[in-house]
Length: 187
Image 1 (cartoon, one colour):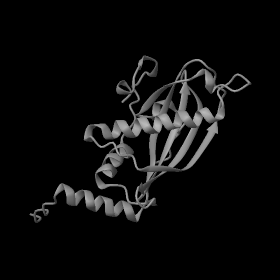
Image 2: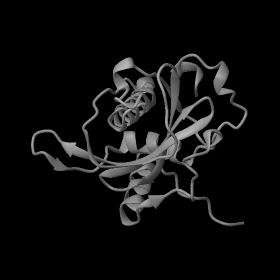
Image 3: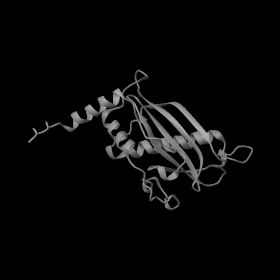
Image 4: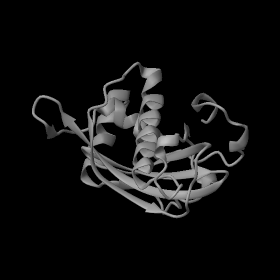
């Protein structure tokens, strides 16, 4: 009979996972950002009249605001159960691929997915959907910073555990976006 495995506390387990994640940046399997059913978190956002440009379609800068709304909603939703609300992240990079014109009025859904986790940063992926059509995809690099020094700092272990759980979560393919009305119903 093999010897019993040593007892490892949850904190030790978390720290060991954190150390192994530091050595190698964790990257998700290839993920199609343009597929609505790939996301397990969606943020509902209403388009505004002021989002239009003189050509009558949603202006490119409005897409960055939609992505911001998705990112913020995602992080706040993720941290709400723990009571943590400090978001000490800066956006280091934003890439948007515009796929189709979008027009006012209407509600859109911003899908959010963690694509990779590093020591002090994470890369998030986004899809912007209206009527199940993907109008844009995006990626963002978010860097955790120390507010006092303004330098990057490792992601807190407890938050990294939440991110890791989201990183490995499978999407809910049974979702019908047309019936969803609030972020609480979107998970």
